Image (cartoon, rainbow, N blue to C red; front, side, top):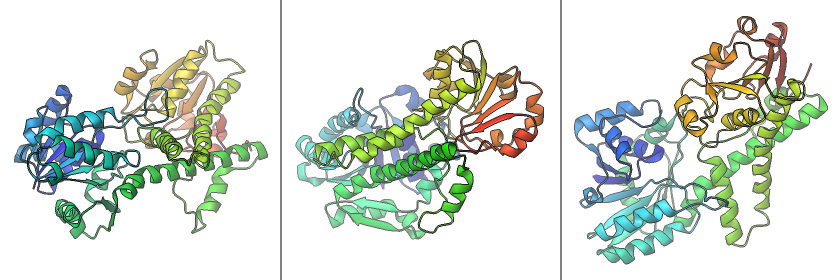
Amino acid sequence: MRISVLGTGYLGATHAACLAACGHDVVGIDANPERVTLLSTGRAPFHEPGLDDLLSAGVRNGNLGFSTDYAAVRDCEVHFLCVGIPQAPGRYAADLSALDAVVTSLGPLLDRPCLVVGKSTVPVGTAAEVRDSLRALAPARSGVAVAWNPEFLREGHAVEDSLRPDRLVFGAETHEAVQTLRDVYARVLAAGVPSVQTDLATAELAKVSANAMLATRISLVNLLAEVCEAADADVADLTTILGLDDRIGPLFLTPGIGYGGGCLPKDTRAFIARAQELGVGEPAGLLREVDAVNMRQRARTVDLAVSVLGGHATGRTVAVLGAAFKANSDDVRDSPALDVAATLSARGADVRVYDPLAVKNARRAHPELYYAADTESACRDADLVLVLTDWVQFAGLDPVSLAEIVAHPRMIDGRLTLDPDKWRAAGWEFHGLGRSAR
């Protein structure tokens, strides 16, 4: 099947490569010529395990290409909308300008029956607007069908989540549209992946609702962590107890400095904004508190760091281990780790940041910070060390050898990746969010 993917950022590049790996003839369209040039060589403009292999295989086999020219999509049977949907400046609402631009460019080229499929996470009701706009612009008019097929990708696992997802959601208005989607995903469905057929609105709500629930769970466990600190209890033991309850389970029960990245924060806020537009803003206030608790974790971490440093950060050397919003990623969008580092720097601390993958992107976002080449360089002569991204190599740090190079052995574990007893036994003043001081 001949397929176009409109937008080749994190979602689009991954989707295009995986569609090509499933045997389709795919063209990716993007307005960024540098990105198109890089993808055309079989390399991704971001880190994602396994993606470069798929990209290079598709380009080499001739069934995956990239272009800035929309004319390349004319002969495609299916068009996937994969543009980024950021938060609107100064508001909770989603910024749909990139999606609107793609629809405006694509519509006049649709001169034959085709299916346009949204994958971007959008406010409920957007799909119907996209359908109406495309039919007004397209020579094919009502021959243009629209469906919504939300993505559920996890950074660091995106290839696996694309080729072997835990579910596929098909939001469509006709049986023909659903069948076309089943043809697109024939290999995935043949492997036994469950699919859910539903309407456009429900499909639009699927991803944002999942993110709102995950955000709520994370903020709730961070609330429990703060209560544990106040009560001299241990949140690690508490979450172990909770995780053994089948109704709750152990996943996403690790407290820390809060969630970040390009999805959970902006999707939760966009959900609140859309709920208000639909007249259900009052109950959506719950999610405002979820967002507030999440942002509070960053402030709590900064306050704890300043307290450990004796009440002021000015002139103190602080090592921050981690810049990405999560391990196995170079994504620093709305990164709690980088936010904490920048705030401590603004308070006068000499902050040194190290991250195994995200330094380049972090430097672009916060050029005022100093970025070390490795953990040892970041920690040398430090008055305080903070672990703020849950990289495996940070969890494996040796407290004895690290104590030999810091000025003062003080540690704040913002991700609960370290063993408190081990670090205290090595002479460290150890603090963990939600961990007992014992």
